[in-house]
Image 1 (cartoon, helix red, strand yellow):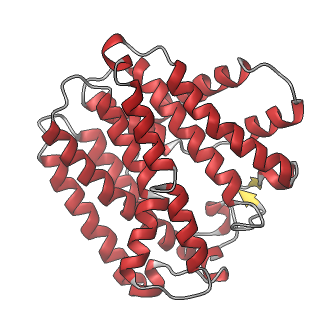
Image 2 (image 1 turned 30 degrees about the vertical axis):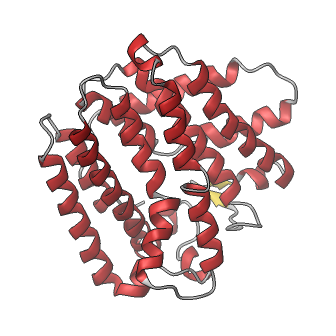
Length: 296
């Protein structure tokens, strides 16, 4: 399977940055802070920070600027997982092979930890020491994260997901759902990083938006595929959890082969978007290949 260049380097970088941010918080409630730490540093591939870093690297952005963007994105992602796992949402006991936050602590603490990580994301963007050119774009970066995380993005997608549980929805609705729930934050990873480059043109951003939108959808299709084809050990949670929850999935609507073909089509279209960019796109291409071939 395709490996991601420099991923361990960037995982280490973002983990250290996030740990510093948590350590800088004034301690009031010890249990809540430990739950935040548990939810944020429990592990994971750090896909969104990695995508931000390699996009910034491709476009010649300062990595110190990308640190703030990557950290904010991961805080939003971590908070969403804490809330998604709750009994009122997906009701999961395991995440990445470990107890979910509400099982390791309790439901109220998990809710508050998610809330705190969400606000930490914006605290990071507001206070990060961006270079002068990018500091002038701080409000734009905040707006991009708001659009990706809120009603018009991830939260809206989660609401659609909940309303679709237990019934079959058409493919068009499933694509809208996942373009918001999963795709919006992946797209923000690319576009916020692009905002940190002073040489990115409007046309570049259009091509990057198209690439990120396609890969966001491909990411979810691959998630649906591995939910039924990978082992519980690989998944770190029960196999077939989406089917058990009676959710519409791409394999359910298109069949396994149809879903695989759909993912491949999106992948090829995403690569064509990268070909339009006047940069060395090797890392972004490798990222796309990794997404549609991953096993967990």
